[in-house]
Length: 283
Image 1 (tube, rainbow, N blue to C red):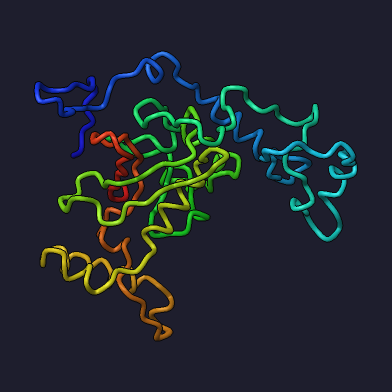
Image 2: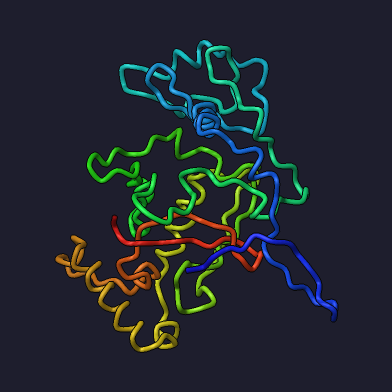
């Protein structure tokens, strides 16, 4: 298991760096309560007369917008029309924007991973069920809260919660916990110039592991890993309806994980460069 050691950055007698992840007071002394993470989601995706609208926008609403008319236009005899909502609208009936999260400024230095707090949905769980039921091999639209008994789909407001405090605009996921093949074969970057949200992480993880594996990649692996990946590929294919239709697809990166396809959170990488993603079996 990859363990992050909290310490300090030092230089040895030769002047070379012997850095480890530095301790920071930010994470310890200013823990964000769960209510504030959720409050941001309610602000970003409010429920207006039963219609969920997206209200995130870095730009102010033009002053000539008929806000009441926009409210009234969301519902009609044809159905709901959330697309009629103009993002960034402010009104006393709407949840206010939480003041904790500041809009990132272009070209401003970003906090290091160890200086951030992760959203509870993204925190690495060492043991037990996670707060999020995320099968990396399934589209993020299938996300549920982490309870096997009920499998309640996660709300749009919770999907759009901030991924970190403070906001980051880039997150480099460059390691898989417990993977004996190092370095990680397919590191990937998550980006959002307005601040990364939880849904940005879910979508980036899914898209990365949906990519097909080339023959050269496959034959570079140890033979035992090739056998395991092939078994995972066949098991995945047999569970798909397109298998019966005669369509045959190739090995995907998700097959590399075997049956460890459940997302179990992130941690700062001990190499002080990026994030470690942890996966596990269905609990």
